[in-house]
Figure 1 (cartoon, helix red, strand yellow):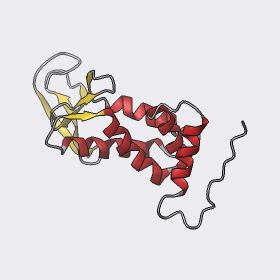
Figure 2 (cartoon, one colour):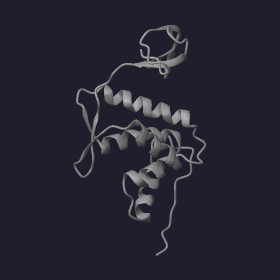
Figure 3 (tube, one colour):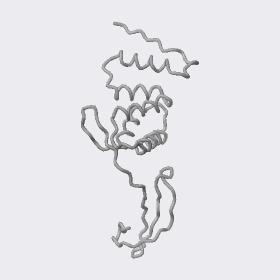
Figure 4 (tube, helix red, strand yellow):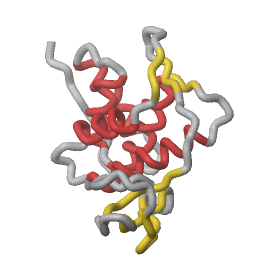
Length: 165
């Protein structure tokens, strides 16, 4: 490992500990030449996942892009960012566990919506409105009605909406 201070290649490990819920190892190192201390992370190298977009274009899966979308959908809902990072971690592990290396953006969206439906109805509707490209109030109404018909909604009042036209 090259020292960021003097570029010497020999260092010693002072401390190692698990990071990112056991998905990486954090190491504190000390350069044997200049005594500079620095931190490195060791992760398992994964094969990149390709996302096939609606328009047919392909791009590499971006965990940051997905997390950003979730954070935007969950603003002011009380959901902690750490919980959303866990959702993204779990989704990424699920995608890495597949035999194929291509996934459609719609598959990712549906996996995220399944998680959000358990966490926050408001975040679910916000994410769905962007992901499913809602065109008008009827799209919102259909989504809200779908939420009210979900199993386990017995104690909740059914959603009643009247569209004034």
